[in-house]
Image 1 (cartoon, chains in turn brown, cyan):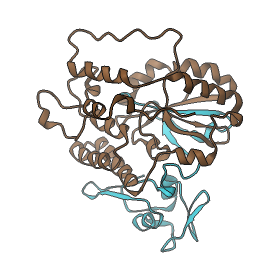
Image 2 (cartoon, helix red, strand yellow):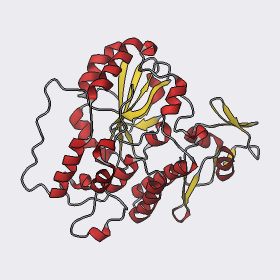
Image 3 (cartoon, helix red, strand yellow):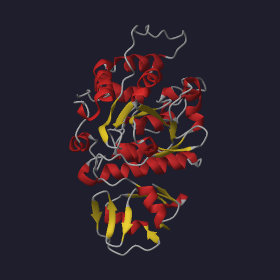
Image 4 (cartoon, rainbow over the protein chains, first blue to last red):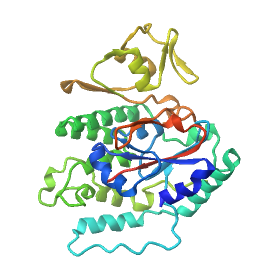
Length: 244
Length: 113
């Protein structure tokens, strides 16, 4: 969907850069990227540099940057382009675990409303700085995520955690992920990354389980999990509402 | 920025943090902060980080440290100037975001989980 949009807008001086945030690196991202066969730059971000540098706290999200390298919209939720024919409701195969059914049900409740976002994107590509959706530099800074010293320290712990995981020190990584979660409670990506490393089963949903293994729930090392956290915060609050 | 040592070459610190170390202090864009001791070719990371207000997290038992981002202005972005972003693609080729100057760019974050 994004690729079709990129193909259409590329002749107008637009480029899409996709960044896979995954500590597992190639091993985690390869299947999705190879299936998509991107013609645009498609990068791998094992330590979530996008969180440090741009304030990304959730996926999917986007940052708009103009021709001279000035950010005109800071990190915000980026819904997939609207489809002419709506996708049919997802049918889960028989035998799908209840937890996964619940996850899909909650994910479906996340408000998407892509129309306004994509109308704004096209307006910016067409009109550049004259577009009312291209924010002034002071507004870009003001709309970027709040970050105090404690949050900045949480980012440092997250980096330690990702490196410890890569180095094979999983238990130590978990400790540091927990510290990052405590210090940066508004980051979904910091939590989802850590949860996704606690695989349950071997199948395609192992990394989406993101919660206690029903056979050994006491072994779950984190305070929250995907389903518990989204039920607590409400799927409607998963992303901040889009603002023009 | 990840560190295997708390004493690193100045160039490594500058590339990793985006801060430039000048005789009168550490500078990032228009912002310059005085340093408590003049910086030589080798940087005492803990001291400079303290001056700039960058948090340092340590896992000394693994010989690993990490510098968190500065939090100037209490926002993720200190200015609207896009920071340099250098990341590899699937083939391991490093890509620099700045190579796309002259085009409008949509930087899109996703994850396979």
